[in-house]
Image (cartoon, rainbow, N blue to C red; front, side, top):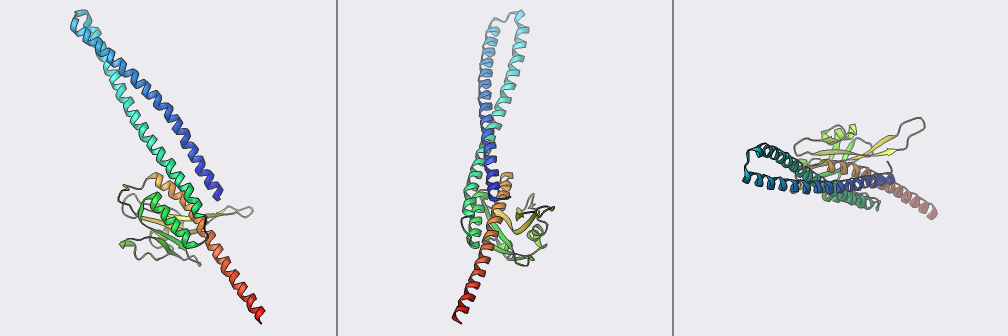
Length: 274
């Protein structure tokens, strides 16, 4: 998927969230109105029961029973509406978080593609992982030239990951992820997630598109204030992976071209001197 298509995906998701917020706002107004109506009905029933209890005629006993039953039903409905309102409020908060995270990723994607220096790209990816995902210990790996090893390029390694500077394909979780091009997500434990960095190459006639592996991102530990790795984090990390792969590959190709250009210029200068 191209950079433009990725950005359109982010904008499309934002539109979906905005539509959901509008629908949620209408639902909230309906819930609040119904809640107020039920409170008034409960108040009226309670007042009527109080009046009936003062008179206490025998012919009012059946009516009182019915009123008590109606009151219980209304109270039950009121509790149900309160629960729905709490769910909606939480959903509203979640959607706000999603919108904010998507907006931050949208801005960060421009930062990723604003440079063609590999180390600056890696540093930007690291900043996004810290600020957007909330990772404390993580690693950014790129695939070496002969495609046999993952090379550590940046991140914050903990004591248990100090040895992860070079990882052969198929070895450790990162190597398995690189070999299979399949994300890994732990249910529990310190090693939370590893995700491949891939870029889709144009398909040849009568053939399917090919995904080329660029590297792997692994997250081992979250910051203290971050309770757990959420589904939103996973979605954001997947979106980031596409941008990161494109930016890293672009920087690699540019630097390779620049080296070749300098070699050619040096050779031409040498010929001129002779």
